[in-house]
Length: 86
Image (cartoon, rainbow, N blue to C red; front, side, top):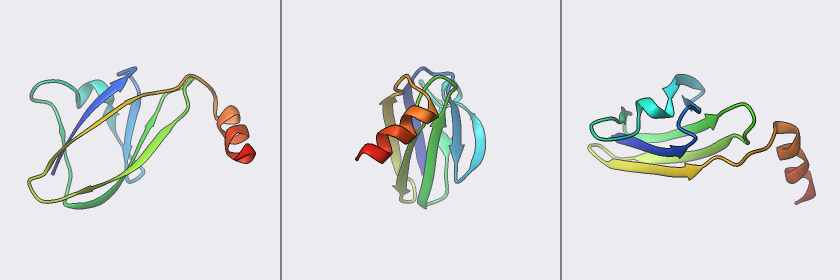
């Protein structure tokens, strides 16, 4: 399957299944996408000064998917506080 990214800021690091693949700007725009095997994959976007973004994508063979998000400014300690308040 093919996963395209549309993320702000585009310098965030991209991890798939806990493996670093590059930065968002390498998988964003015309003719740019990451190729993933069919099945479920954990995607994590991280950038210092922003809260990490995590999701799971479930790709089928030859499927094209686009992941769009804006990272939220903050720190990991703030994210922990947000989680504990819920």
